[in-house]
Image (cartoon, rainbow, N blue to C red):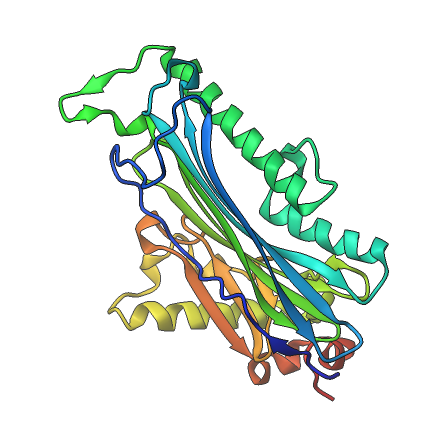
Length: 304
């Protein structure tokens, strides 16, 4: 299997955004409109094989006023979307739409949206959904009267959401991408997550562990992941007790295929406390070769 060469003009950085108490954004202060927004669209190309793919990119930044009818500039929610999606594909239009739908369903939670007929409409629908949901949640709890603290407006009214995705790997048979999400909803802290996905470009479906690994090899895969996790925390002078239940940590479905092997991610609260953050595990092809199904070695990993 021959890898597709990249002509990359998009560089998407994984980001974690912190919430500041009552801080105003640099956007122009809205008066008559409900939201202020900024949207840009660009395109990159992946070529060099029979599976030529170009990727579009939609960027949106919205300041969503809680009470737009009062012309109040605060409080508000900030919504940022940086959505990379398949723009064109050398296959049929129906296959392109199916591939796009995988991206929309993972990044924009399509079950919440009214219109997913195109990437732009899906983004617009998510903006509408988030705006309505923010106002509904706050008003249900606090009504129309905003309470102020001694330090000014309470931070609990200022929500924040950031969604972004990036292309991690593309070959003749695999497309891998990483979706990151940060959400703050007025609590003690926000939540950050990374979701990894690999798509089989023949079936146009997300690849599952059962598609890649031999059933009898799963215990060995679990043990390898635990070993890597322990090595990571031992560098900080920690041990198995750092995890909720070290001996029962298993491979999860949050993985993607890369040009080097397979990456796994365990998000906050999944295997350890919130403060432990996100755990990222990289397994090289040599480490997992004996655990793989024979047919995927060539198809997914370009190995004989």
